Length: 342
Ligand code: NAD
Ligand code: UDP
Image (tube, rainbow, N blue to C red):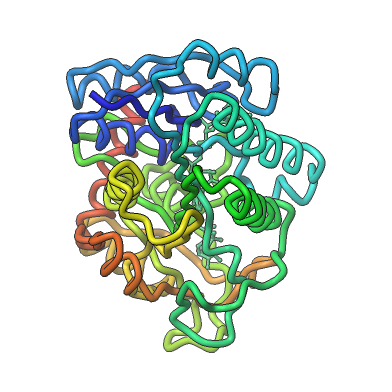
């Protein structure tokens, strides 16, 4: 059984990916410092797959701890690096913490992979690297734009590090997945997103509003140049996204990659506005969303969605979960969280 090292594997996207990896016959070992997740996630993973993944609490931004981990796990065949700080607003307030954590962790991981002869890496990048693109949908050849936040900068810088390392480390295969907007939860409601405090992202804020934890959802702007005036994103189901990682890992392990640094858009290819998303949620769940239109949020772009042709053809991956099913899963997860708190 091939062993995959998943950093940030108790986090939102990491935990769903661990499930898909295990269900595809991979052995998983997780390292996470639990700064934005908790150990109970392992129970959720075990409930779904029947297998409890190995886990170590490690800060990957710490070189010594990271090297120690790699020196003890020489049988790892590939790494998926999710571990990062990801709150856009917080990154503006704490730029140093974001650069230190997100850049050092990637450099430590790649450095140790080189040292211990581990060749394959899949990295979590983001559509934030495109900023407000001039032409939509964005393809992988769409020029990257200066990011709006230190968080966004860390993703662009991490991609640059991977590109530059790949030029000289010909034996290494580095692959970045540019996620669009991941939403939803595992259909079992055993794992999902665990927002810390007041959520910044649309779906956790929306589900918490419907659950009565928040009073009202603010729709940030209805004066954008879009059909209904609200901003447009490409919302990708988290299980579809998790499956993309399994496909990417297989591509590297089977030597099917065409270059030793590659990057792919991972979205649905469909743009959905905030107001359309609210309507879809109401249809999917039968619940009413209490919302009001407020001003635009600083730093938000107007619209972005993916051209997923490259992922479809090269990776043989496609998003398949219908939006309403994704939203029903997000609501089921919110209800599950409510029950856990009681
Ligand atoms: P998350 O916060 O749920 O998961 C990240 C995990 O990494 C957490 O469990 C956290 O404890 C851990 N972590 C952070 N720094 C660490 C460190 N130094 N050492 C060890 N563990 C550390 O976030 P997520 O939504 O699952 O995101 C996973 C990855 O995907 C991140 O790199 C994020 O930037 C990227 N991404 C997320 C989104 C999104 O909307 N969720 C979009 C694009 C890209
Ligand atoms: N949004 C909103 N109200 C909220 C949170 C988000 O209207 O409480 C909008 C936001 O302006 C954007 C979309 O929902 O157009 C997705 O925002 P999110 O923060 O989830 O992801 P982003 O695209 O900013 O990474």
